Length: 272
Image 1 (cartoon, rainbow, N blue to C red):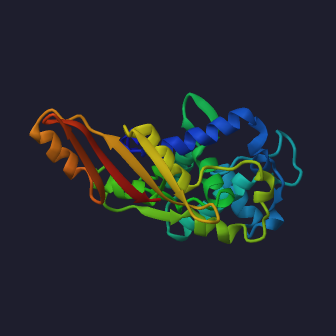
Image 2: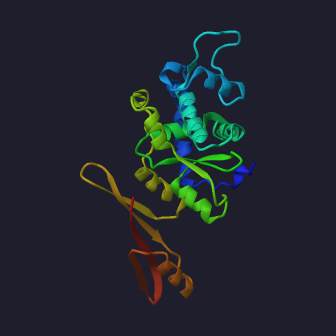
Image 3: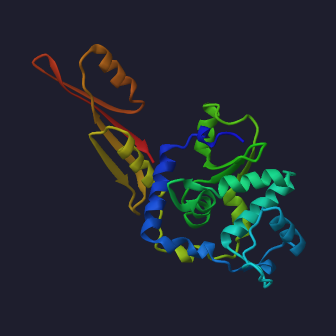
């Protein structure tokens, strides 16, 4: 399989994951609603024979205790994974490759913190925190897989980190079809993730050297834009050229005193 470290994770994804992990550290049982076995086979379209086969080859874990022959019950995460299996089988992906998909997305997002897997992260992102942009699962020919988003896919394509052909599943659409009547969000009313607009503010706070950031909001409280002010140190002519090229749209202020530049500042306004 490919080296997973080659897939570049954006700073915004790391910030988002840190936000989720921080909340789970404070409330360890927050994922209990999606990891409690309460879905039976009658809730699914799969036959006992198919489920038995998938369990026998390791695609599914048997939720029953050893020696117990009672009714199977699955978690919401299991149900979500079964939906992915069905989609991949409909495309003809071999079962051994699907097992590699399982290994990729059931892995924990960070080895040093085992509180959330990539599949759990994707489920929260698509089903609970629906203000987020679409979440995708990309699958290579050998089954190596990544939970990702459109901007990361574009970035990794640009960096030539992924092959030219791969399978892709829009998990928002897949799970919307899988859980049309499930009221999952009711279990997460107090578990609010940063919106994309809030992420747009946090990202420059952590990654850029601005002297100040101002936020413009609409009447209903929605974030419309951010204004970033940055002071520049001017020591030579090239520094002025670099400052000018750093602004696509905005204001540039240069003040001189006694023939010397005492203030050089850029003011950029960006929609979030």
